[in-house]
Image 1 (spheres, rainbow, N blue to C red):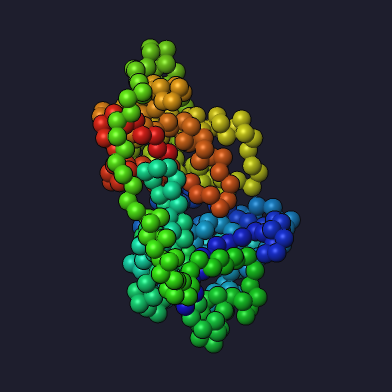
Image 2 (image 1 turned 45 degrees about the vertical axis):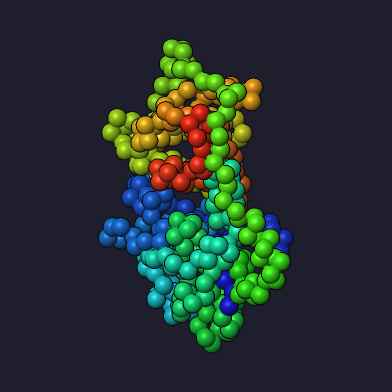
Length: 372
């Protein structure tokens, strides 16, 4: 058995050069209605579906069979559906969409459930900070996959699509084999796991085990200091927070913290998907205002507070809990998210969720452990 990650790509499979057109939602009304930051994450679409309209970006380029819209869903024409319906229909919702000035129907395929098939002990994890890790390379329990063809995982929040290859034969109705046999364009298959990995030597397993030993609790940092913001600093921060909420078109007094966090993730994702990469100055400006709004909503939900902290000789504007176990520099963190390049992922919502679930690395009061 082999497991592949599936994603749309506008690049040539060999040269990596961008050659295909991509699509995006045509209207702001549709973007608000779909709310991409909070949908297509391994659950059924939460509302009664109504067809939305997409538009081509770089329409002068060739059109692939699978369209690059959002990698949480597969997007394709009716012709592709006719060829692959046997493996698409049983694995998720088929949601009709239109493309402006384009005839025929198109569809989004939304996988509406997550499998509990991850072998966490044998998976590889990316350590983002000493207390925060994300799934880097999954390992699976084949017996939990069953007869699934396409699936998602809870452990990466339903953001990635995986497909299963058992025989590699299109006659067996396998998704990758059918795509290959029809020579459909626009998809990239990245091999992420094979059950050959089960035959690792004892020495390799021992090395893996040592690499995943639980991290120790971080103790108090005697050299760190913090202070309250001055009146001038507080005034400047409030101005940035107000600008951030204006960017999101949200009311800071009415929007819930979760609503703000999801809106920020959506805004950053849209920024990263932009066909024309903004300037570094624009990225820093947006990172500053969104970072201020991110920190404000974080503090509102988790009872953290803004402080100016000195760590290792550096002075930072941070948010921190009352026991000073952890610190996050929201503006620096958000600017980092906005400047990421594929395949790096936007982890702004993930960090909030981890803090809310109290799954940050254990740290004692006064540790000032920086995360994010």
